[in-house]
Image (cartoon, rainbow, N blue to C red):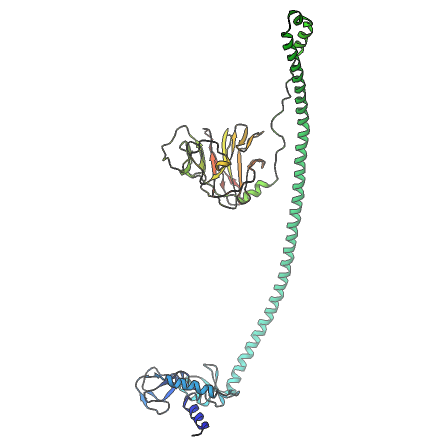
Length: 467
């Protein structure tokens, strides 16, 4: 047998009798004929048998289809040797017959073989021209709808572009407002800074010359007194004649000695550091702080809402745990501050003594010495009419604050105290490199019916803070 005949026979044996194309997933019926699985499944579309073989019409009570893997390999070889030729337009790809009708249910073109297949028995099949005329009317209606949609889309597009342009103008206008207002604020702050520095300089020029003049007079008086004392000590060493000689002049000079005391100058500066609007800005970082009763000294009495603390007259019977301060009259806030900016306010009222600040989480709470930064404490202590800290000598106050604001900027190492009443700066610690968790610290120091109260955060217009 010639080679072309072998190739043709291979091609014929690898072709499905239903789709007239190379087998795809071939299966064998009980009668021994082979078909593509999908082709025979379409032919046997009914749910129950008997099933007739499309080739020999032998009936089979069940769908006994066995995969034919050798035939699948042979079909793949034939497909490689003779790739299927491109299907020309208007020809069925499965049966190589002209497409003469149209299935309305599946919306696809059919050839005569496709139309006769069991798959399309129950479908609505129309001649090509009838189907084209029917669908053409629907397409024209769809085109009218789509054109209307296009008009609306173009209108919406124009509106969107107009909105974008308007929005961009609004953003640019607001950007200019922000730049202008902050530039105005910077100029205002510079003017306020210059005015405060000028007032401070005027106060310095008013008081310091008088103090220096008073100090110079005291130096002169001390020098004159030293000379007179030395003269009198020498005269006391002389014999009687020498001691009494010109004694009248010495006695007169002794009587003329009148020590002029230094001028009394108030030790409070009239000029305070107050940045307009700063406290209001810091309140953006306020947090809801409450007291931790497990850390409270046994002499301290906490309110039920854990926002107020005072020092009582009696010592309570509380467990002596490492977390509890004793003997120091302190209590910590529940917040652990590891990062970020934080602000809280404490109402101290007319208390004569108090201490506020922060400390490290791991400080020795049985500390009996000085609560300094070296020991992990950064606190401001108020004693009657002045305040101090272990890092700075006492500073007198004209008007003690009734409410104190504490601001912590952890990363910047910044801790400052403010009078929340007038916004003036009370004290600022030198820049510190904080490490580990910090806790707010509160200490009433002395017994008083007036408690120290953490101001409650209220949400609403203005976001005010209330005790």
